[in-house]
Length: 197
Image (cartoon, rainbow, N blue to C red; front, side, top):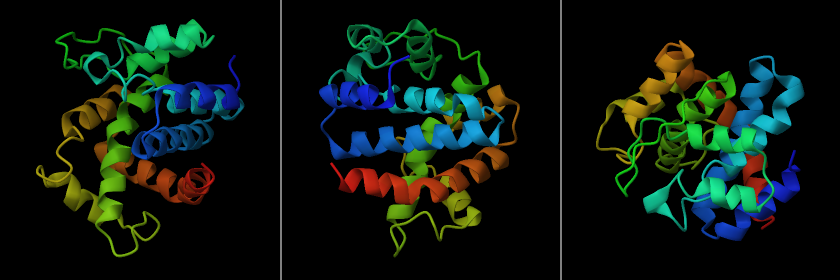
């Protein structure tokens, strides 16, 4: 399996925008958090690498998101298992070039990736509206209020988040609660990583 450092180097080869780098680091650490929470402690590095690489093609190839990723990942020596997981977070989503992604999330890890991806963006957007600019003092009710406001962070698809919760057979409230807690627990590490770039 590709190492974490090699995966980050590969991601940085195609991604320079701090926003995209922060999102990748967020998903890496949130996925590791979920691995531990759901009893996959021995696989937390693997879960993290999938989270780190999931949007590798988005900055340079937004029109072909999840379609260009396999090529970039294979060139970087990434295994087919990780490639499948990365592409599965686009399941049944039609990308701008008009293709609908048909790689289905099957493993619990892939379903978590699908469910948490858009939600982490919504949580960061909510945090930025707060005086502290942090998730650490955010209450679930504040997140729910922003979640229900369809005009807020409209690019974060509520439909995808809800489909993700259903795929996991979780209540939406549980997904919101756990992902918010994951981000609270990981925020210092994310900021530390961003500051070191």
